[in-house]
Image (cartoon, rainbow, N blue to C red):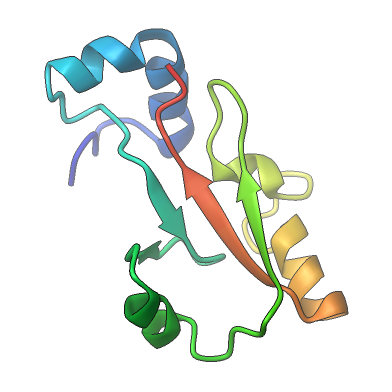
Length: 105
């Protein structure tokens, strides 16, 4: 697994500082643009793949995009692994959350 020696959040900080250089060198630490589910599963960027991985998705989707030197973990409440803003949107409003992970550097 790329960058397995660092946590997702540590890789996000490294990419915020040196992301362009990591991408140019095709480093294993470079974070590619990916879309993810609440459980962290990577979603393919085609319509059919999304429907297969999100069969219960409604017509309303919220795309949660983190900021500089961050990852999708910023959407968690109080460090809780299981409770996120996206999960609350799903539970209370029927909105399907999709998280973006990308290189902010």
